[in-house]
Length: 95
Image (cartoon, rainbow, N blue to C red; front, side):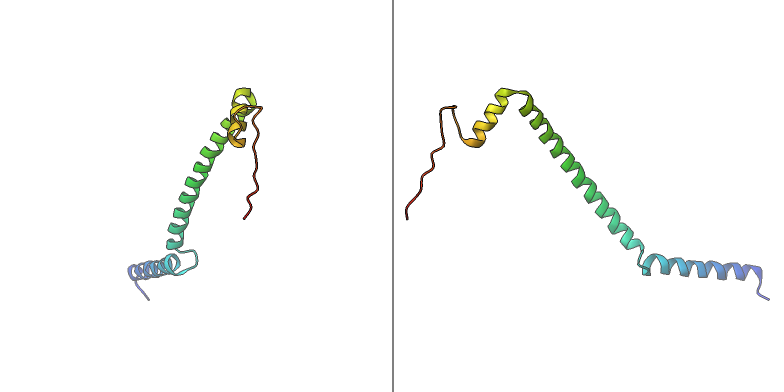
């Protein structure tokens, strides 16, 4: 019969071989885990950037709703109006 000490060493060796194979050669290996962690970090950063942008746009929209002077300023800026009497003149160019 195999001595108890050798049996423990053999089981430890088999376990080590199995775990090595599982972590490095299976579909769910440790390299994929590291890549997934990196991908998750990138997505978290992107979400935080978008959250900051959303917060900024929400603040601007709330100011737009609350303040009539701000609305006039934005409308003038977007439509290129200087006064209410001003109009945008469109010209057709002939070639």
